Length: 118
Image (cartoon, rainbow, N blue to C red; front, side):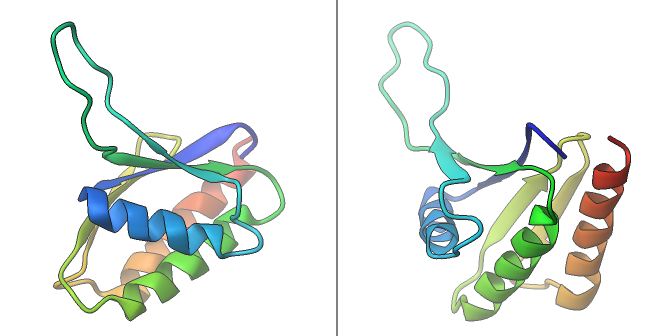
């Protein structure tokens, strides 16, 4: 998955907390960054609404899914994130009703398939 990004979108505060979480992970540190939306003329700057994680070879997908799974289990409030994979596949992670085993297994399988299509 060289030179590909996984995109997370959701509430700004959730994305900031997820970025902080990824920065504490030895493998993911330096791979994640918030992106602010593009501005049109006359618009004021807004809050970042996207978190991008750079993926490359070497099993980063497994680390990303594991870290995300652990982060979700530490949340004490409702949250919703949309994960957009490099092939355009979107996976909705809903903290109110997330079926963690199935959802993260599906995310892992999709990331693994991207690794083999290169």
